[in-house]
Amino acid sequence: MDLFNSALGRNISFIRPAYFILSGFIGFPYMKYYYVFLFFVYIVSVLGNTAVMAVIYLDHNLRTPKYVAVFNLAFSDLLGSTALLPKVLDTFLFNHYYISYNDCLAFLFFCFCFISMQALNLVALSYDRLMAIMFPLHYQTKVTNRLMLSLIAFFWLLSVIATLTGAGLLTRLSFCRSVVIDSFFCDHALIYSLACNDNFPSIVIGFFLPVLILWFPFVIILFSYLCIGYTLSKVASVQERLKAFKTCTAHLSVVGIYFIPSIIIFGINLEMHQNARIISLSLTSIIPPMLNPIIYVLQTQEIKNVILLNHYKINMTGKSASDNSE
Image 1 (tube, rainbow, N blue to C red):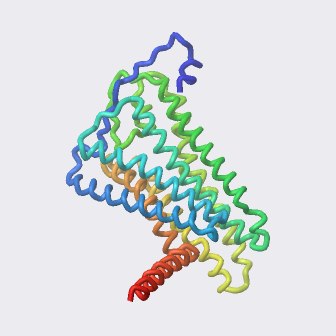
Image 2: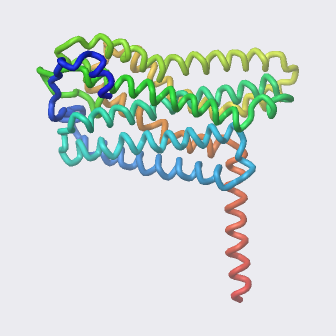
Image 3: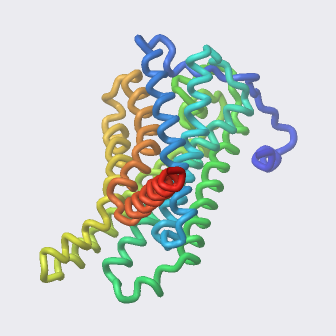
C-alpha cells in the first residue's frame, strides 16, 4: 500500500488516526438477541460449508467442473463468514468498538475480497450450466476441470486486485475530522467519506467495487439464463425442458438469495433509514453463506446420493459389528 503514497511524492504527509470507531449496532434495542442469531448463523455456515467441501473432496465422482466451482463457493463462503462475523461479535458483544487503522483496512480488504469472490463464483457456475444445456454433447470437452480452475483463479486475482486497490487508495487520505464509522464493519464508502483531503480516486474505486461485486455478475448471470431459456424453448418435450431446468434450480436459488436483497437495498438506499440499512446489509452479508450449502445439499441429486450412500454404509457397518458381537 505504500506504493500509492510514494507515487504522490515524498513530501506529502497524511493524518492517519490511531483507530476508528465502529458504531453500527450501538443503541439498537434488543441487540443481544441479534448477536445470538449471528452466532447461530456463523456456526451453521461453518458446519454447512465445511461439510459440502468435505463431501466433494472425498468423493471422486464429484470432482467435476461444476463441483469444483461449488467447492470454491463453499470455501469463499466459509472465509467470508469467518472474516466478518467473529469480528462483528467481538466488536459489539464485548464493546470493543475501537479498531486500529491497520486492522480496519485489513478487515475491509478481507470482507470485500471474499464477498466479491462469492458473486464472481456464481458467474462460473452460470457458465457451467450454460455450456451443459446449450452444448450437452460437447460439454465434457468444452468445460474441463482445468478451465474451471483457471476461471476461478482469474476471479480470485480480480477480487484481490480490486479490493487491494480500494484499501490502498484509502492510505493516501487524511482524517482530521470524525473517526466514527456508522456501520458494523469497515465500510469502504464510509471511510473515504470521512477524509478531509481529495478522495476522488477512492470515489471512483468506490463506484467500481459495487459494479464488480453486484452489477457485473448479475448482468452476466441474467444473460446466461436468457440464453438457457432460449435454448430450452427449442426443446420439443416439456419433460426434457423441466429435466434440464432442474439442474439449474440450486444455482438459481443461490443467485436469488444473494442478488435480490442486495439490489433491493441499493435500489431504495436513499429512502431507507440508516438503522434499517445497517441491519439489512448485515443480513445480506451473512444469510447467503449459511443457506448456500443447505440449498446445494437439498437440491443437488449427486450430493444427496453421496450423503445417503455414506449414511447407508455407516448403518451397515454398525449393523455388521452388532451382529458379530452377538
